[in-house]
Length: 65
Image (cartoon, rainbow, N blue to C red; front, side, top):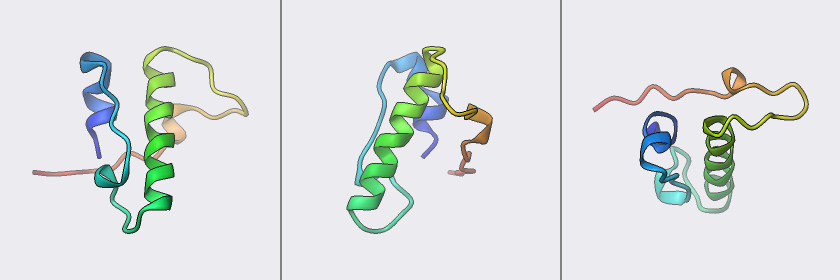
């Protein structure tokens, strides 16, 4: 859940899909994972978000070992 936020800018790998989601099911978690990956790609490449969105508005999950 934190890989895209913490490590993707270094590794260049963005994870997306049902197996990387905290939600049960398939369709909604898959779409959320794709959105998460795109948001972090945009943030790490200094892209500008539309509509006043900022990365600080995006939820940060607190995952532990």
